[in-house]
Amino acid sequence: MSARGFTLLEVLVALAILATALVSGFRAVGLATGSAGELRDRMLAEWVAQNRLALHRANSDFLDTGNYEGTVTQAGQEFHWKETVKSTQNSLFHRIDVNVYAPGESEHALATLRGFMAKPLQ
Image (cartoon, rainbow, N blue to C red; front, side, top):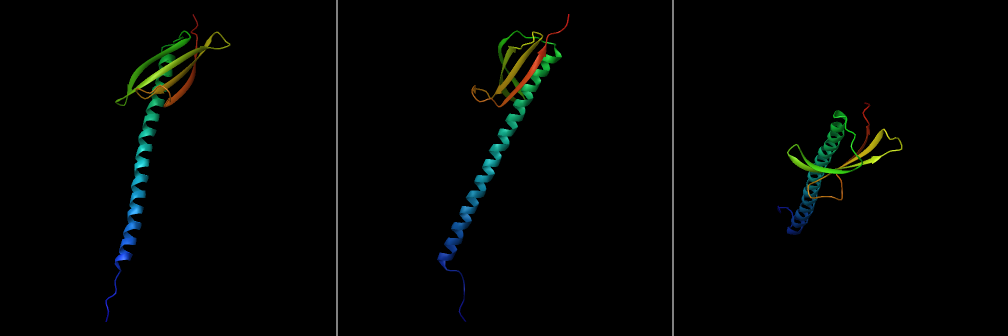
């Protein structure tokens, strides 16, 4: 009776296939983790933009046209915001564009939101 088993070559091929599958799996997990972090940053940046517009509405602000910027902390993370206030065809309204960036970033906004401010009636 002869003992049957796997040859060394068969074992090596099986290990190579398993290693390739594991590397692919780890890469997919790494990409998913990175995507989750980016989605979190974008969600927090969206909240910062919404908060900026809500603050102006709550204060009944009617800002002069121009550019404004600052920093704010949201959920323990710092964000840089830029607001551009533009006039509209109706002098009672101004358009405000809010862009929110990661610290040190000034080209690619994590969030962009547009709103309108009405001039308060006296």
